[in-house]
Length: 303
Ligand SMILES: [Zn+2]
Image (tube, rainbow, N blue to C red; front, side, top):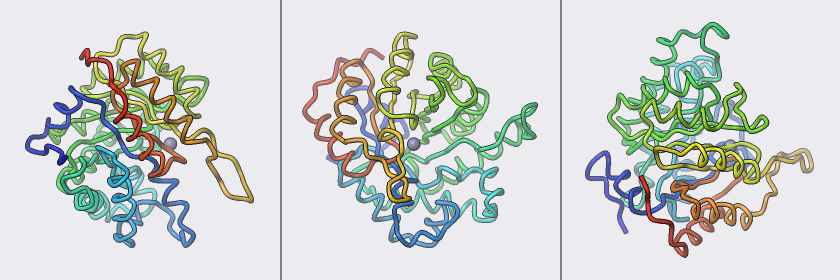
């Protein structure tokens, strides 16, 4: 069934009546290419557009409702560090256009915005104004390329994620936001799940939750805390496929898709309404999640 792209809030209207399925990993998918010779994953957008089209198309064909652009490191702060600042438009607008072309009428495109990788003052050198500009420029390039919504993900600092959400909202597109609770059920910056939830909600995110981390067992505990806090927006969960292991010198995620799906099934039953997966997952994971969602009657939406 073609997705409704008639207005910017069409994806939110769909979310009001059924769970949404996001795609799986981008970074670990690109790392698995044997001829990898790039430093920043965003370079693949510029150098191998056909390959990117294949990655996007695989997730669409697996049944994702929403695919994410290869722009996790596309904010100006990260691009400057990678020596790619002059490519900001080509990387962000280009990735959104590639994803949009691959998605066609079959999926929405989420412009992906990752954390800056730097620290705000006084911990670091970055001013709030500089941080806001870094995300705002990225967000507007993503919107210009055809993104239907924006996804701020893997954040660990409350003020930074709020700045990113506000910058993304300046495009007029819906903004989903997730933080990563990978240190004793807190973010790297010590934020607890309920506090991250509230911070993202108050900045105006349309769906809020958690991504990446140490696998579904821990994410289940993070979601317990978010559910106990009483979320005011649809909850989102994109778990890593367990924790990586070194096998013959290569980083591998060996967590079975069956268990990923079983956790997701439980989360849907408890009211989580946006599901996807993160590092180590593949289009095969997305396909199984799609089958589960198609066989599952979710609880009636309460928000
Ligand atoms: Zn991840």
